[in-house]
Image (cartoon, rainbow, N blue to C red; front, side, top):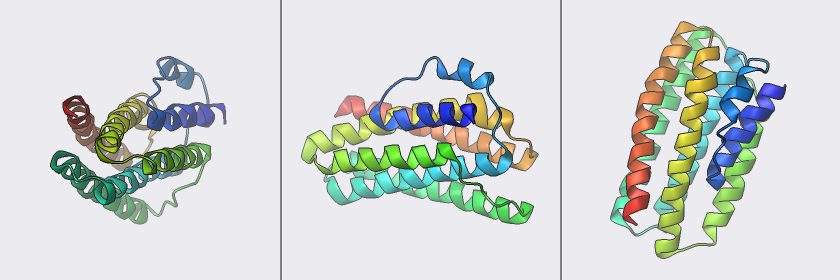
Length: 179
């Protein structure tokens, strides 16, 4: 339970662009999430990024921001579709947990904050949030979710996702710097 709360704190902080430098060490000392919980956390993180991207597509007129947001919808939808197919094949029901719930609450709050912005202020805040979100989620994948995944197919999907999401992080960082 403590581990789930620590993961939740690290992931929920991403939308607010807060760093969690001490989180990996603390996570290593707590109970491990099971595969059903890991699948739910990863899927939820993807769904939340899709929702953020859709908000950007609705609000932004910047070509680079819209291109990035379209990429987020496409890539996260593809990974989530693979995840759903895998859990169906394995007869695993993704398990809601405090981390997934905290992710959702944090993303909802960030979307509300971004809804109050427009133009360049929105574009910059969206890009900065995406960079921070991917950095934190990638850290959780590397430090907790991938190492704790027991099923080799789930672990492989998470590793493939991490490679793609590291590219997203770099793209978001470059986009934020250019705005």
